[in-house]
Amino acid sequence: MSENKILPAVSVFLGKGYSHFIDGAYLPGASGQTIDVINPDNGATLATVQEASAAEITQAVASARRAFKGTWAAVSPAQRALLINRFADLIETHGEELAQLESLCSGKSIQLERMLEIGFSATSLRHYAGSATRLNGETITPSFPSMMGEQYTAFTRREPVGVVAGIVPWNFAIMIGLWKIGAALATGCTIVLKPSPFTPLSLLRVAELAIEAGIPAGVVNVLNGGGQLGQTLINDPDIAKVSFTGSVPTGIEVGKAAMAANLTRVSLELGGKNAAALLADVDIDAAVGGIIQTSYVHQGQVCAAPERLYVHRSIVEPFTRKLAAALQQLKIGSPLDETAQFGPLSNAAHLDKVMGYFKHAAEHNTVICGGKRIERPGYYVEPTVVLANGAQDPLLREEIFGPILTVVPFDTDDELVTCMNDTPYGLTASVWTNDLSRALRLIPQIEAGTVYLNMHTFLDPAVPFGGVKASGIGREFGSAFIDDYTELKSVIVRY
Ligand code: NAD
Image (cartoon, rainbow, N blue to C red; front, top):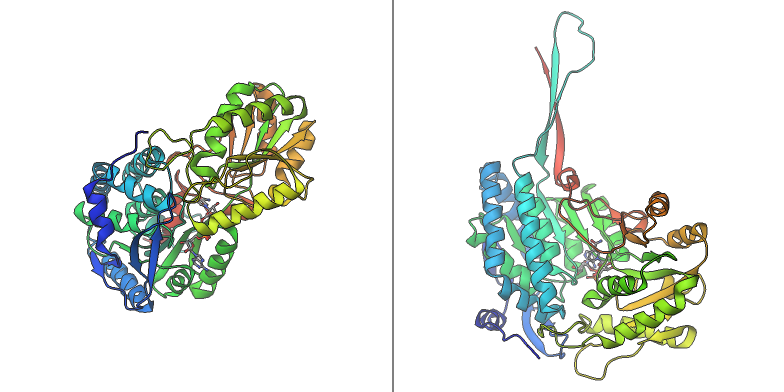
């Protein structure tokens, strides 16, 4: 085993006892309530964090508002770009420390932490930095006729919306937090982040690094707490936009609260019940490798990962046999073990949820492999494949967000499209085939924000990402985030 030694900086950070990061410093919480942060590898308490009360929410939002109108407004776009790049450099410099911290709290493999939470986050920040100097409107020639010889000209400006509330789930706390921070910083907004109570520590360290990079105090604030804190934050009259990533039921509550608060702008990046389709001509061995990489990475706790697998009837038997054999070979191990390929679920509540689906599968489905808890400390379960039990099977309809893949045989392309779209969700989908013409005919018929071909779950800061149907409103990445974090102001001039 090549288990990583915990860095001294991580041990020191864990030992400190945390509150909230407001106006560039830690502020003790007045609520007297605390949250225990649990290591999913063994169930032990890693740290205790104070829970924010209404008083800290007011202070955090006020500090973000002061920075938005003051210090941050005085920073030129070019200087903002420089600061974001410096911040990205610091995320990388402290990458191993952040990766270990988040791996301990979330159970995510250290390799994935390094690649995505650190590497991809730094790349995304640099992408946003490049946008900071390109927030341009357009010049317009009004067509209204001149009555007395006067002339008109018009132009639009992109102006930052103001203070953003960024609400973050537990599956990729650093990466998703940094997407929201990067978009806010690039556009001239300030932000109050609320991580999940399961993974509250790493974004506190990220906020410290923002200060070290030279980003003014108050631009990035972090409050800790659960759903109630999220609701109170959304209700603050100085919140101009809510950027939410999480589940569909919470997203609906967040959307309603934002509308009721002040018709507050809201973007919702929500869950999925993503489908992958293996056509008859697919290279079975390559598809087995590809599906393992995407459906079981981070134990299936990835919003974009496929949970429904439509397999052409002619290849169901060899494909499922090879998939089961390969899954049984995965090395199960601690998140800090660099050689482990499959680790624990992130928290006890989620373990209970997944165990509920195992029980259902044992009673109603053919279980091809897995379906049990693994006998060791922590929240480990087996990578699992089941055959669907009819179109109404809850395993086909509900987002599990875990390592359970439900397989459905299909015969025709028309049947495939109907089945893939038979869901309230629409985050991602994939088609696996070498028949390009067929794939290109299928893609427009599939209801999803992103459709992949011969791959699944790939994100890039240049490519818009988000859901259709119940999987959300709005897009991260691409140029779409600029629309989401800025207001378009029209200026009309008479001369
Ligand atoms: P969740 O909806 O339970 O919680 C998300 C965040 O919202 C947490 O910070 C939580 O404390 C907060 N929250 C809970 N109730 C709230 C309320 N009433 N008002 C305001 N905030 C509230 O989700 P989770 O379990 O942390 O994360 C898993 C979910 O996130 C899955 O459904 C997954 O698909 C989704 N997700 C989506 C994306 C995406 O980009 N589309 C990315 C990652 C995760």
